[in-house]
Image (cartoon, rainbow, N blue to C red; front, side, top):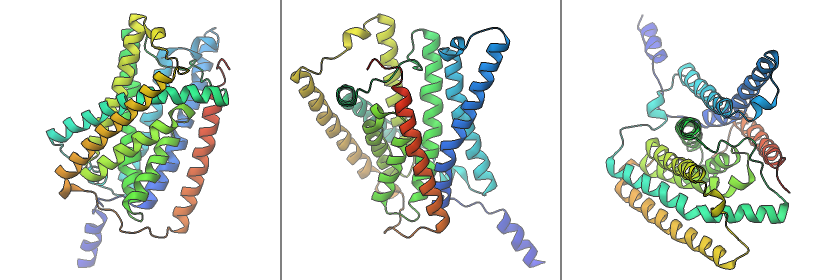
Length: 338
């Protein structure tokens, strides 16, 4: 009788920490699930349009439909997360490191998001210019969700800011990063999870910035032991980007902000802004570290050997991610002016 009671108690115990197998499995399925759901939804959309007598062009550039695809892909991943933690008896809030935030940390996180965006904006555009010059890489804007009306801006806030920030932070910082710390030290876990965050964006122009942004967010999550601050930084970055794009579109001044990077002064300003922005970010991160010394996430002291299952999932996931990144980069350049 006592053994049965113990068995029932153990069955109800929820673990409060992700492990490496959680990390690599989630990384693997995060690559597949959104792609499959978006593909199926796109096919169904095309079938409906054709049955109603419309043309494929009606749906290919339809902003509401593109917003729908973006949202449904992320929500499918969120459903996977919920099912996974319930099936594996994981305390989602504790394992994902979501807890009540401190006001001062929220303010610092917003500052980090602003400094990161402002400091990197010109440099990222300069890299885009260089990729165009060196590789004739000119991404198409055919599938862009650049907001040109209040309605598309509100839809963009939901599809490009709120939903992806929430889902991506839970998946790539909450599960992937935290899970890696079971067998990897802090530095390896931060670098590897930042690489994963970079490569899932499938765009050459975003590669450097997404890695650096992922690096900053992950470091903050590591020092604070709280995913909420990562969400705040990510939200601030995406919100500023979308809002600036919306303002430029609505005022008709977007073309005036096309920079001439053949002018060495503009390039110098870009590098100067990057250095200043990086300095401000580093200072704010240092303050965050000092204020949250007791909350730091516990990581393995050394890199440990992975199991055969963990290695298989990780190798397959990284290989698939690289393939998708190459395909995404090439396809996004398909409509370019090169």
